[in-house]
Length: 118
Image 1 (tube, one colour):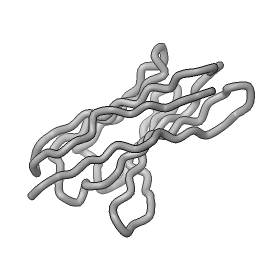
Image 2 (cartoon, helix red, strand yellow):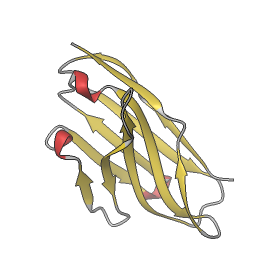
Image 3 (cartoon, one colour):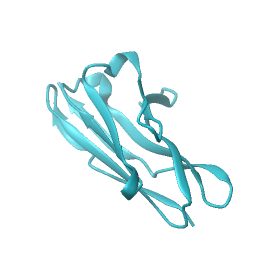
């Protein structure tokens, strides 16, 4: 059984930084794409950043230049370094991984709250 466990959320003032981590564990043969999504109150979940197994990165326009996604393939872990945080970055951040655990499946973390105060 595969689990994605996130950590690193919290409360920070505008202009501050946070680093999110997400580790995949269980019976995993390979991990393809990994990414971070967020959902603000009353809004749909949106992609924040994604990274392929080979390291190709994609960012939402709203976070370009402020957030950096990275991964450690040996640890099946993805990170999101968030700098220059803004109040509009507030939301629940979810980790996603597309991986092979026998078949190709999408998995989601439980979510971690990020709150940016003005």
